[in-house]
Length: 456
Ligand SMILES: Cc1cc2nc3c(=O)[nH]c(=O)nc-3n(C[C@H](O)[C@H](O)[C@H](O)COP(=O)(O)OP(=O)(O)OC[C@H]3O[C@@H](n4cnc5c(N)ncnc54)[C@H](O)[C@@H]3O)c2cc1C
Image (cartoon, rainbow, N blue to C red; front, side):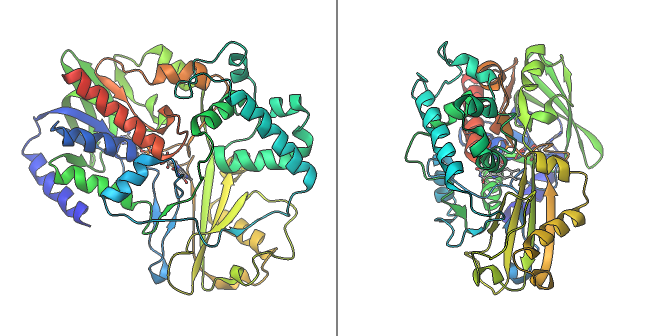
């Protein structure tokens, strides 16, 4: 809680210094914006961070108001073994990362047969062969001519070409719903290959979690920014960004009152759907607006239910499964937490999440319980608390994370990484760590370096 105190203290100083001009104003206190501000403060740049919500972290959102002091994640949860910035920062701030959960969860669908698994393997062998032809895995937008057209081919169309779609469909769908927050019909197959090339072999996926909750990372970063003399304003939605001859003027509203912040540079670390809803003077470049249309808005609804007892551990392979489900994965959040109670997480991604968007929170929780009752008939009596968050409906996110629609990787991404005058851009959608916290940090680092370079 040191951070909250530090913030209030800074807030008082701020009211005396309304006319101060900063080296950099950072829009958005998600991981991308906070890391950029942290790095700039380390190089002695004066920074002011403006954040619309009443908290830092953005899509990092840990639910803490649970019985037995348990916590669970509504946003990101898993860290891969090659997410070196996340791992390094965890070490720097003394945040403990766990190794793989000891109890993964229960599958909400019956096990898939040999035919599906063979089709799956054939598909990934073909993807590996494509990945091997990408000359520079750090710049996959430079696709050689025979590969480039594949950025306009969807994962489904490619699986059909290989003759593996029909047998593998349930696995392809589960993969894209769980990992890409979309369906195989929407995803560029070239991007799938580029991600394979970029990640390389030997990466252990989802091996770590923050033992005390993922939000300990943005909170530690915010603490550090404020402790180093940076300024952070919560409850301050930005409305307009104006480029002036020697800098940038940002117009926001803090607790309802207009606020203008001036700086030599701006880092816009906002989720991409928000960008075109702001007022830009001069207008955002038309090529940027067009490129943003290729960014796929991945849809995820996460539902968390706390139960009095962890009954699923008594029978981890239930005897019955529901015939079909909008929930593509169920796992336990609390395997490393004390107490008899436990929290299960229900993941709804892609078209299922779009369909569920019209349901109330309670109706979504009911659907999850109905699913679980098919496996554990007595479960409803054990419920202590429940919450469901639809990231598409969240006004300051408007999606869960990006998926690469056809054309995004080769056409849009290289353009979107460019600055416009003194305005630099950051956010997970600009990274090859697609839709990961590591990508947000990498983009923040790149933007901070660009501001340092432009100021030297
Ligand atoms: C359900 C879900 C599961 C995920 N799982 C994982 C996972 O397991 N592992 C992993 O690594 N990643 C995961 N991710 C992705 C990860 O959460 C993101 O990649 C990362 O948090 C994005 O950080 P960011 O700073 O780019 O964006 P954000 O966190 O969205 O930050 C942008 C900030 O801008 C603020 N903002 C918006 N509009 C305005 C405005 N007008 N004025 C001022 N501020 C504004 C927002 O409130 C927010 O704080 C998951 C995401 C979701 C939603």
